[in-house]
Length: 480
Ligand code: GLU
Image 1 (cartoon, rainbow, N blue to C red):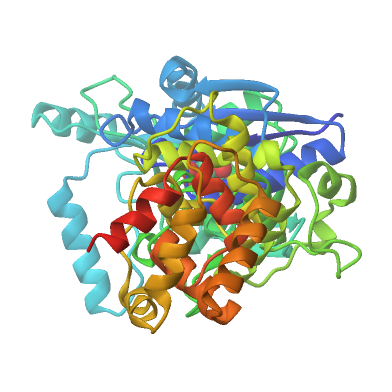
Image 2 (image 1 turned 180 degrees about the vertical axis):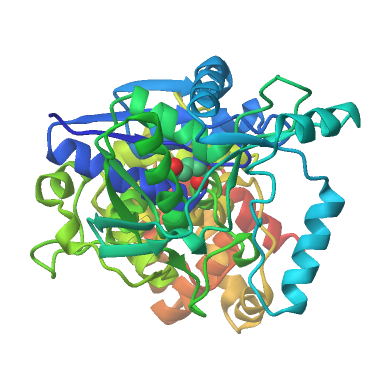
């Protein structure tokens, strides 16, 4: 049977790096096997699910190049299917109504705690008589629906990543709730484990690939597959992404959503490449840079680690810089323009296109993140600059002002200026002022860019001349 995998994000937040990495592994496996990648939005939690999070998830997956073949399907539109399955379990005696109140459950847990036992539901309403049920109903209690879990059961599966996994039924917390409370014979809101299994059966999912934090769910879900007569898929539990301290990456670690990485200036290619390396090693372990398509050709679960994968910003930055430096100038320009627009710089993206490309060519090699271009280019867009402290010290050097005056006299604001023209001016000024070239260049840089460091000065000057700001900047210093 052809491979069918799914990504099943809950739209209770923006696309998280952990979910995106799960998406990457699903995508790679599907593409490797010529299978189908299905997207299912698990929005049964109506209070926490939001359409804007769904949008963020869809946008993030598209941006990363993780195209899906079917979906998105929405669980909120499939509730009847889950209710039918629950009814089937009730009819078969595999599930039952439990009338315990929250207070009773709390009491149960406190008693267990006092005896140093793990908290669990003690299955006390498994065998209620019709009279007992009627009595609870008469009290107005609203039952949840629980699925029976045998304590003696041993659940085993061969995990594609973790190999043999064994889970004891007695470690699953007692009979599990599969639907929230509802009155009388109603079936309340179906819950995660049930809905996932119904969908995975209905969508003919062959492999469930997800984070290892779902292992206990897998044990429960296998029991549900059996009870509902579905074929149990294969499972692959991928390692968690850890922070530098070795703990699960969480919101406290700062940037965790894909849209935030995008805003910071990571390219989709670098981020997808990096996520692939978070847990997977290519057959040639020295290979670090590859596209998703290239990785898909070589992907297998044999080379997915069991151990957690530490998130390494330096590595991501390095990969990102490699991608940026390899982008053709026109393409890089296209990607920088939105960052410059966002920063509020004024320019005409079409009319000034050649200038923007020259600027990109100048600063591109120094970029690690696309957003670095905001700071690096600010002096090129602004009509004026205020020299920083170091630049001021440079401008106080003996001869600096004489340099600026001499250059001003050479400059023809309405004539084009290229790199040869700049070099000719510098040569003339060197001759005229008899000052050292180093001093001339440093003083010019300080006046033109407001800083003592930066990209190639000759190229920078050419760009500033095209924007018509070189002379004004010199004059501004001279007028002080
Ligand atoms: N909705 C679950 C989550 O976001 C999906 C888990 C699964 O893949 O079954 O964690």
